[in-house]
Figure: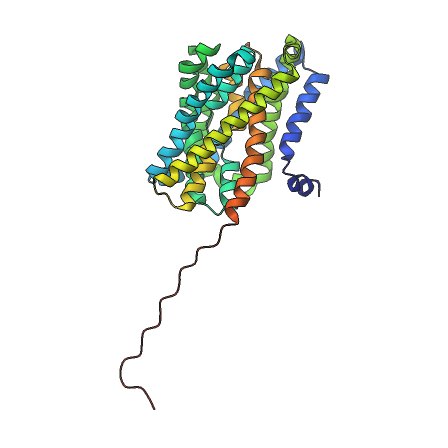
Length: 340
C-alpha cells in the first residue's frame, strides 16, 4: 500500500531510503574503527555489485544490441559526448556561484553511464523498443567502466578532480575483475539469479545504501556540511534540471531528424538522458579517494530523482499516443462462376 501511495505521487521509495541513510549518517556517523570497517565493507559490496552485473548480463544481448548501430551510436554520443559538453558549458557559465566540489560533482554526473532498470522500465511504459533499450543501457554500463574513468582524467582534472593511475588499478580490481568473473560464471549461476531477483535487488540497493552511508559519514567527520547553503542546493537542483531538459529536447529532435521510428525514438530519449546512481556512487568512491565524497555525489542524487519525475511524466505522455493499427488486406474476389 505504501509503495502504491508513493507511486501515485511520483515518489521513488528508494529515494526515501537514500534520504534515510543520509539522515542516519548525519546523526550516527561511522568514526574511528567503525569508519575503517565501513570502508572495507564498501569495497566488498562494490565488488559484489559488479559481480552480479556480470552474472546477469547476457553476452548475446550485448551483441544483438550492437547490430542496431545507428540507435546505439546516438545513445552513446548523448551519454558520453553531449552530456560532458553541456556540463562543461554549465560549469563555465555558473562555476562562480558554486563551490569547486559541487562543480566537480555536477561534471561527474555528466560522464557517468546510463541507467539500466529505469531506462528499460520507462521505455516499456511508453511502448517503445524495449529490446533496444535493454541492449543500449547494458552496453552503456559495460563501456562506462572504462570510458567514465577516462573522461574523469580528461575533463575533471581541470575542475579539481583527483584521478590518478591508482584509480585505474582500483577500477580494474573492484569493477572489471568482478564483472569478468560474473560473466565467466554466468552459465552456472545465471538461472539461480533469475529465480531470486528479489534477493539480488536487495543486494544491489543495499550496496548503494552502504556506500552512501560511508560517504556521508566521512563528510560529517570532515565537517563538509558547514560549506553547503540552501542557495547551493537550489542552484544544483536548477542546473540538474537545465541539464536534463536540454538532453531530452536534443535527443528527441535528433532522433526525429534521423528518421527513427517512434519506438526507437523512445528508447533513444530514455537511455540517452539517464545517469546511473547505481554505477556512479561506487565509481565516485574509487575515483575520488580522500575527497568530500558526500558533496561530490550530491548533484548525482538530486539528478537521479529529477530524472525519475521528468521521465515518468514523459513516459505517460508517450503511452497515450494512438495505437498504430495495420488494416487487414481486402479479401480477393472468388474466381470462377458464381453459384446460383
